[in-house]
Length: 325
Image (cartoon, rainbow, N blue to C red; front, side, top):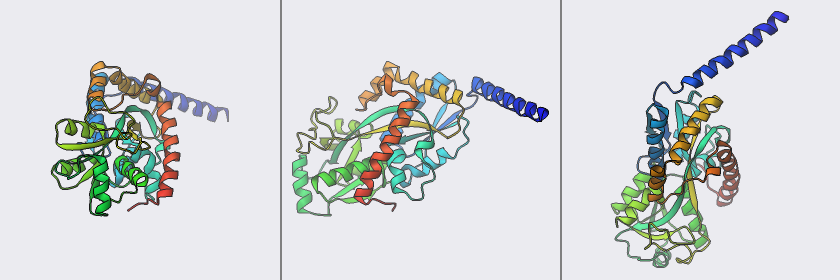
C-alpha cells in the first residue's frame, strides 16, 4: 500500500510539473479563435480587434476562423469540444452562449461549463431599414408594417442570435409582425439590407454603425434612452416612442472545459492587455461598442454574467415559445 501511495503521489507530482512546464512555454504555435457567426457581423469585427492585439502580446498568431450556422451553436460546439490546451478559443455572444441552450434541443455544449476568458465589449443595438424604404422615422415604419402585416421583411443572424432576440423583444413591445429572414450571420443579413433584398434589421453597433454613418442604411432607432454620439441623427428608443426597448448584447472569449488554469490566466492577461490599450479602446468605441470596465474584465465576472443571462433568457424564450427550427 505504501508503494502504491508513493506511485500515486509521484504521478500527481509529475503531472503538476508537466502542466506547469506547458503553461510556462504556452503558446508555442498559433491559436485558433473560432467566431460563431459569418464574417462582417459584430462578433466577427470585435474578435478580430482582440485577436490582432493578443497575437502581439502572446508572441503567436491568433487566427480568426468563422464557423457559422444554427444561431452560432455549430461553432460553439466545435469550440467546446476542442482539445483543452488553450490553442482553440471561441468568441460567443448573448445569443450563442446564453439563449441557445433554451432554444436548441440538440445543442452539444453548456456555456456555463466552459472556461471563461473575458468580455471583449458590450454591443448596443440599432433598428435599421434599407435606404429606399418609404418610412423616414420609426413611427412611420410602425404605421407601414401595421398597414402591411407580414409583408415587411426583417433579416437576422439566425434563430436564437442576439439580433433575433432583440427583434423578438421589439415585436413583443410594439405588436409588429415581420416576415423574418434568417441568415448564417449578421454580416450577410446587413449586406442584403444594403442591397435592398430585405427591408429591415435589428443590428449590433460594430456591424451597423459604419453603414449608418456612411448613409448606406437608415438608422431608425437606437435601443437606448439617449442618442449615441457616433450616430447623432438616429433617434433613441425614447424619442421613437418605445422607451422600454433598451437592449445591449455582448461578446466574450471562452476556452474548452478543463483548460489548465495557468494557460487561462495567460489568455485573460493577453485580452486585458488589449483592453488596456487606448488604441484598442478607441477602435471599439468608434464602432459604437462599450469596452468593459476594469471590474468587468475578470473570468469570474464573465462566468457570473453567463449564468445570469442563461437564467434570464430561458424565461423569455419559454414565454415566447421559441424553439429549434
